[in-house]
Amino acid sequence: MKVNRRHVLVVEDQALLRFLAADMLEEGGYEASLAADAGEALDMLERHPDIGTIFSDVNMPGDMDGVELACVIRERRPEIGLVLTSGTRIQDLGRLPGGTMFLSKPYEWDEVYRCLERVRH
Image 1 (tube, helix red, strand yellow):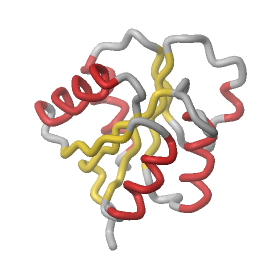
Image 2 (image 1 turned 180 degrees about the vertical axis):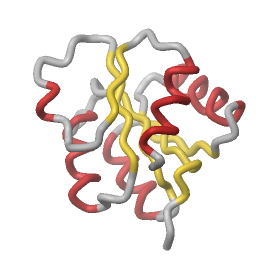
Image 3 (image 1 turned 135 degrees about the horizontal axis):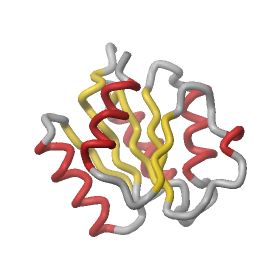
Image 4 (image 1 turned 90 degrees about the vertical axis):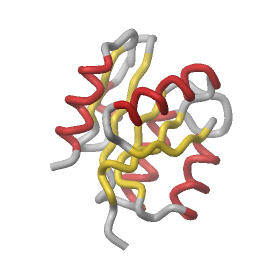
């Protein structure tokens, strides 16, 4: 199945931020799916193979953080665009898989939209 770059999977453990992101993405003309952690994100990718972009927080509970999730997705589904965000400093941006966009929190939504457009190409 062909991926749809305008179908964005939001991976965020804080419910309020997850729903806010979905609202903002939909306002920007994107379709949003939601996951609270990396495990849910991988399940969503199995159920919705058309998801074309991941917008994920780096810091989340569970066995896998956002960087590890991005690495797994890049390995399994290299066609998917990756945008990671964090409010804390990333010690080693070199751990990010190639082609991953990174945004520091707090961010403006126009920055998010620009990143999403850039990973679509």
